[in-house]
Image (cartoon, rainbow, N blue to C red):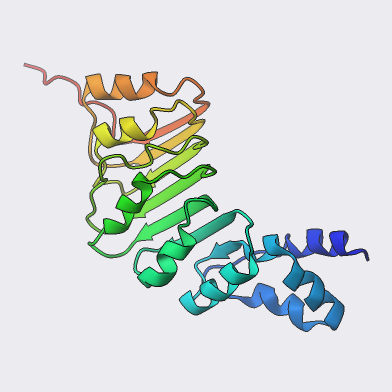
Length: 204
């Protein structure tokens, strides 16, 4: 098979949480190894892999856009390499600690970031200017968003590029803030909300 067909097949290998079994294609034969090692895209999708392997894969991925699923307690020296503003295209971040300072990193400019998924398993706080400078942000999902602030969310969608929004949170928006947030998403195609709609006025 020509290299481009092998690459297409390699990219279909599923990436399971926490394991690196997909790199076994590099152990089959010399040719497969050469093709896999030369393909930056093969190394650019990281699915909750160990930190040491994450650093190795980053080096192999060259300048390819990165798609990553990771925990916030990943060592800082690796965490911020992965969250490179110039390369990050898709990110799923699971907050397992009460220190949500990593989110302040997303106040920077991310020129190619398209998808953000945030799982807030612990108490956390959405910082000001969160995702406010992501000109190609299309998909945003926040699960267990008890640290959500609708003012920050309104800033995150201010560029009007969002196509899908999915939020599960126990923090309801005010009617005014909710409507303002909706007005800033003219391209929105899919909206899923759980426990975040404005509370109705109390009945007498």
